[in-house]
Image (cartoon, rainbow, N blue to C red; front, side, top):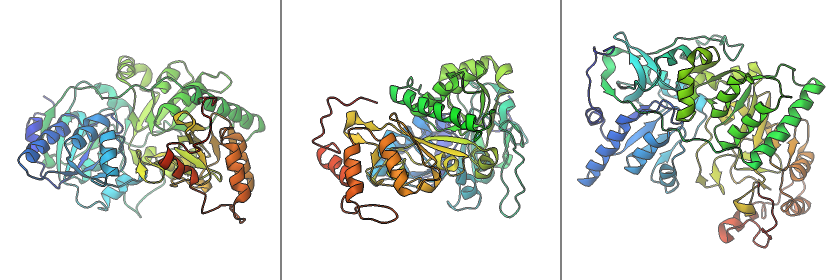
Length: 503
């Protein structure tokens, strides 16, 4: 065995080393490359403790969200006391919103530095999925890099899940580096999305290894839905905008690289853009490699992609593994402190496309909290890109829940992305280009081009009655739509929803 130097242990034995109160970092970015057997064993252990009336909860740290194998398993066992930096688990979300789990929502590019400098306190354990670990401590990761290299370096004890389900050739698309601490940082030599600066492996001190757990499970990645009618309309608006930017010379004919966040809207928009032959073939400098990008790559529409994780469904991943000769020169997986690095994003002129729950009349956006209080998932890495992109698109449907919700509101109930970081708002209704516009013009554009027609009269009346100032607002009325929804189940209770066009 390539890891015969290290003891082979069961997942249950690995879990028995982890006491209640420990801070445990797991590999995984979405469900890609997530540890599987050990977190499941920790959840089983927690249930056993709870059954005896004993407390057992741990602090959980990852690179991004992790899906079923970590968050769902551990939250289902009530085994999480603290969580950072991002999650997408329905069970964990409810626990966070009930105040049962302390949740730290943060930019994903900041995670490695926070760990390295001890801002989260001591990192007790790291549980990392890999295809191989060598006697000298080289760890070859699976379908995500994320923050695993930093976790391996700074954790006091390490458990490796060896998973032969994954292709050993994944190391050929890995480009792993760790940022030195300030003030010892040199310029990062990435001037093209596929430029390499690191190694094919992460490193760990072999003396830290508790043992090896064998597991052969695929990533538990859910398939994305086909592009919705709303996503297609959003993509059409963005396509027309990009073609006009190329025509006027504000974008080069050889397009700048794109970034697209996680989710059905982003996946649908990228798919629609890529199929439009008027859009030149393009590269991606992004956080995750989506299913749609793989098929576009095979058709020559996407020339290459840099990301930190392969967030594709099992069939797509199988296709990549069967055709690695084609994909190895076209895909690069980096540590998230590089995939999401603001300096690189700005240098490359990345065109950022991310989603929001709601946008307000001046271009502020809320991506994380329903009615300002209830967490959905978190900011993730979207703000790393939108704040630093050459052009920043924020996308959302104009209405939700059959028209009961307007996603364009007078004032966002929570702000993740300020008006200063957003260039373009796009909904199924249209596109509002806010570059160079003052607040009054921004508000007019957003109402007329992005809001659903059923909500435009209300939004115009709001502005007319608002207190005059650089920004026009009525502080007694600015959250009336949100309050209506909480009280009556609809933002405009008297609105006839029967004739609304569904996005």
